[in-house]
Image 1: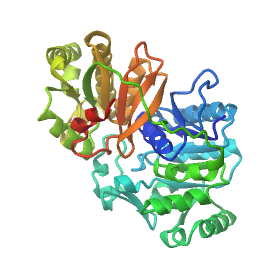
Image 2 (image 1 turned 60 degrees about the vertical axis):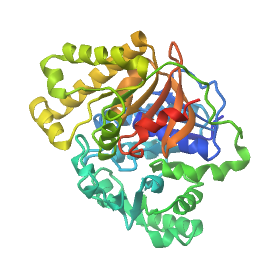
Image 3 (image 1 turned 90 degrees about the vertical axis):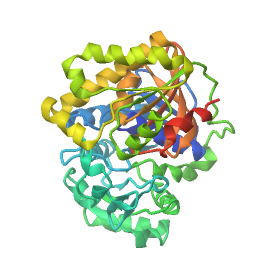
Image 4 (image 1 turned 120 degrees about the horizontal axis):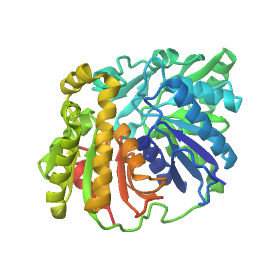
Length: 421
């Protein structure tokens, strides 16, 4: 039975977490949504990928509790609620409400919040989240079209979402080691604090925090904490030398990008210099949806035989705001997701695409749903937090890389193909 059960609030975040667990020695399976049946494959950890980050808080809570019930039925002993390393959320949720619900269901009065991922320059110091060495609200996340992050102080941000008091385990305590962290946890708990934001500026800090979390029924974090958790149960792991090995999958290649993050915008610009591309614009979709989809598929049909093609809706903050002003925030996003999913489905069904790189959590959720993916086997990392995977449940196996918008080096979209078997 799996030891660690994970609930991820989007699909790219789920593969990010699963990749970290595999690299740390845990054989890991990722499911797409909550399975209807018991898990058959042997694994040390299982990650349930939800598309719950942007939906109403009550729906996110209901989905997360369904995932928890299934994970407990599989025998999971510790639960890991995974969110983005940029803490994507709004004052209404969903990180706080989901954490509250999981705590109540597990009968625990204390947990931690640790979004730090130093490998991708996400660090927490004195409770403030930094991205690419600047405060979160200066990193570009303040312009996020759905979850603009305008405050880097996680104690304040989380405090606005949860019914629990929020405290801090600061850097000085973490540097004293796991015993000092556990003493601080106990003191916070005794003072009535329910959730402790944890400082971490390097991987050693994450290992310290992971050791201190050994007895917690629930941890909430980005993917970074996963680096240290397997060490708590080393003697019980199903060790496998080729845990990240994937079968070779032949076929045409495509990039589908819906993220508007700074990192993805730079990656798209690089990719446009190498590959034929088509820009899916929200306002154009609103004017003539079918024509835009047909034009995208016409371009892909003309060029796929020569190499990857790029279909992207990624746009600058000003362009996004213009579309949202005319169409509405949620309607603009839903329209783009629908189009990218429909285009991808047609490329796979009719044009022989079998190897896909998808950028953006919401885009990945839409694409995976359209393709009928039930689960993923986790393979080698392209960049920290972004592995290649192969699908479970599709008519023909596909190679998928589901990339969080903020992740990956500038050359990610051109370099990734060379890492496939």
